Length: 414
Image (tube, rainbow, N blue to C red; front, side, top):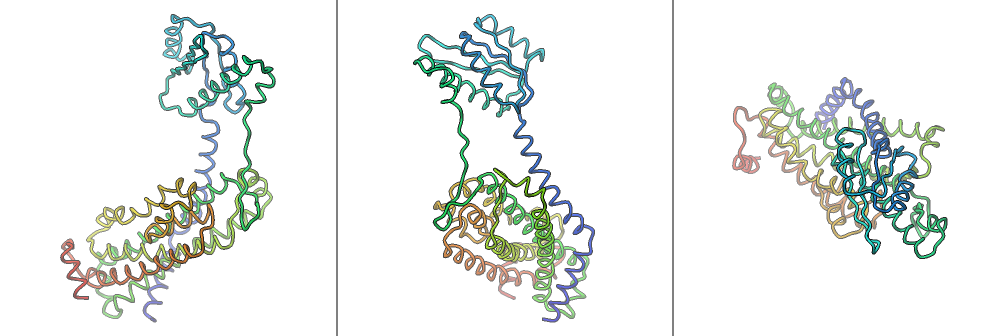
């Protein structure tokens, strides 16, 4: 046990004193905040400042669509009207787009029965925000036109078609509490990404550490005084403690920021975020178990590799369950109690991410969390048993890539 703690201390101090630890501790939260801020601003102002022409055979419809488009002040659109438009005008609009006089034009044709066909032509084919904004404006304009056609006053038609912003609240323990769909999603997304990033980063650090010591032949010296299992346990404890230290620094920084007046101003309305104490505790528990699972797996994998490049080639395969659970973030957040969400959150390699997403969206039954943790713990025990046997022999093998039959023989000999 003394050897284990000595190796853990060596690994911890070596990593914490390194420049990479200081840089990642400072830069990762900054990059996170910048990515979220840029995404929000880019989404809000996507497709803004454009110059369109609305061409229609019905002048009233064209004017209504223009009014709808101009209600979005953030879009800062410049909208011209061409009505009534003839077929010969279409080529003129195409020429204006080609000559970059306008960004695009909306061509509307309404028949005698009131059926409307709409075509948008522009320089960009991937402008989703503009297509969505035009579609919504045409729908509102046609609805208003139909209402006024049935005798509804124009002001009443505008009021009836005005959108309603829904405020979300969550029912917890039989009571309604303030909740923000956007804030909950962002909090779950950030914490899931943080969990994924730290588990994979420190898991890979364990693998790299094994490879570096294996290629430098330090193992041969160390193995003369230390048992392989003590070396593996020391690496896992030392590098895992580095991850916990970094998470504790981030948590302390977040706590200080949340106590400021700036945070109170920013985190209101749709940015309101609630993170409970059980969520914080379970985040730490799933980090530890997820780290133990993947770092032990990477240590065993590294023992079979001859170089760091070879480890990097195999690492994405070992990380497939993590990316699979991360790719289901939208589905799990929207359907936290569905069959597939429950199955994925109980599957040990996906549990650290998937179960935490469910916890952030809607706290699942305690028995499901308990089953998830038990299965994850049993998986850690199995992977430690499996990887330690590979590790004991693999770290002393040089000059030849291990094959599957050889790995099975190592398991039998260990």
